[in-house]
Every structure is written in structure tokens, then in C-alpha cells.
Image 1 (cartoon, helix red, strand yellow):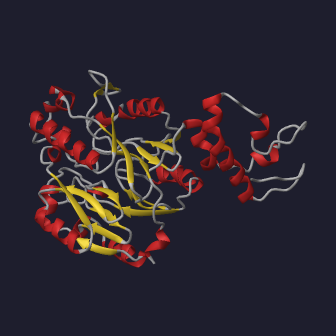
Image 2: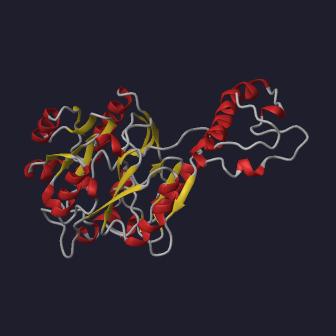
Image 3: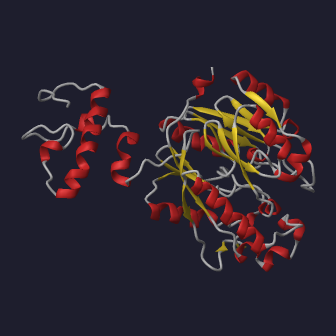
Length: 379
């Protein structure tokens, strides 16, 4: 227990220890109602609170006392909690079929099979020790420009250490707008702090943001994230312990999203870490500089074959913990490569959602993870 003389100087470590000691006492005080002023950190009898010390308490050291949980999934530690949106007829609104080119929906899934595959996917998550929450949209879900598209895409929630970053859309379709309001309301209802909402002309679609390690994050620059949006995120990420922001430039489209790269403006559609220091990647979807950059960082790169990439989006996967991932079952060639690299694969049948332009990663808001390896652990 930290015992200090009146008016004494405190080290940062002693300040953190005092908060941790209170964290241990608090459950009993809540249970019994036996609150004692001398338990309050930095208490000095008969004196005003030590404001100089409270100014030095880090947000991450105390926010769980207010919000009830250590929110954050910005790493590769064991995945504990996620949220998903079960597919519904709201995802297949008749409005979606008025102009298949504008909506970029030449093929639609079979809703019954889609729901069955999604329910099976959720059960696989639970079988692997993950708590699954459901996000529900109003019916009908109407946004600023009409019926909201892409309701199924739960990953448009990015929960970094300490809270959430709320998206501002810039690509795919203006009819995605409106999801951010529903998702913000859901997060607040769950008790998750909102650390940042992208504003102004900044663009950050949080769906394709990719964690590399506890202290490193990858951001796809291009249609999904612009310079202004990344600049808004940078100070927030640094303050929650993520100083390493790796930017990769992505492809986009002009008149078509046809194979082979037009629609893959989210980096998770062609790359994803599968273990500390191991990255799955389809190099034809990114510039050579990205390959060179990842190798310079120390990554072992596992290449996705063209046929798997075209049909199954193998990199759109979920890392359950370092060295264990969930992948689309159809990507047999890539799964074999991943297993040869020493990574355990849990296969997930998931054919229908791909018609909508995404896979299991896109479907899943990752909310809580254990702390895991840092970028330096690759060395």
C-alpha cells in the first residue's frame, strides 16, 4: 500500500499503484456500502484534494472504474467480446435494386442461407470463447439519403484501447451514411466511451482499420481514409498507447469494380496479420512499396492465390489470438499455406455475405481483447 507524508512528491508509478489499490477495494465497498473517505486515492486528512496528483492520472488507468469495463481490441491478444448484426430483409431493400451499378450489387444473397451461415459463424465464435452481442437497426433503417445500406457490416465500429472511434464515410456509397448514428447510440448504451468522431472533411471508414499489435495500427489511405481523417485520429491513438500508424495506399475505381482490384479499397480485402510477425497478403492489390515496407518491419508474408482471392476473400478473417484465426472455408489453397506457416485455422462456411462485398471480418465489431504482443516483439 502506498503511504506518503502530507504534501509529498509522488512518482508516476506510485500514482498508478494508488489507483490500482482502490480498484481492488471498490467491489467490496459497492457490495457493503461501507464507503470510507480515507480509501480515496491521494487522500490527506483535513486537506483539499491533491489536484496536482489527479492531473497526472492517466485516462487508461481509471476509465474502467467509470465505464465498468476495459474496452479495447487494438491488438492480437485473445479476443473476448464482439458485436454483430444478423442479416435481415433490411439488407435487401427494393431500393437496392433500382440501379445495380450505382449500388454495386450485381448479385444478391439468398437471405435464408445467409442467415443460416451467419448463425453458424456466431456459434463458432462462441465455441472459441468469444462473447457475442447483437446490434439492431430500426425498421426501416432510414439515413440522410434514404434507406441505409450495409447494415450487416458490424466492423464499422473501431474500439481502440479505452473507447471507440466513430466513422465518417467517404467511399463505397453515400447510402451507408446513417449507420454511424445507430452504432454510436449502441456503443453508448453498452457503456463504451466515444473517444473521437471524425468531423469536417476528414474521412475514416473505421471498418478497414487493421490492428498489427498492441501499439500499432494499419490505416488504408485512399477512398476509405484521407489525410485529414488520419490527422484527426493520430493524437487520440497516441494518447491510448498506439504511436505506430502504418499507412498503406489502396486501389479504387473509376467506372467499374470488376476483377481484379476495383472494389478492394479496404485493406482487409487483401491483407491481414495472422500472428505476430506473419501477414497474409495478395500483392497484386497493393503497391510494391507496401510489400517492401512490411518486409522491412520484419513480417513473414504469406501470399494469397488469385483464385482464392477472387472467390473467397481469404484475408477477411478474424484473429482469435496470436497464431489462431477464423477463415472462409472455401479458400483451401490459402488455408493450407497458413497452416504450413504454423497458424491454426478454424474454417467458417460463409458464401452468401461475399455477395455483399465483405466477409467475416467486415461483419464483426471487435470490442474487447486481452493485451497482447507489441510491434517490438516481432524483432
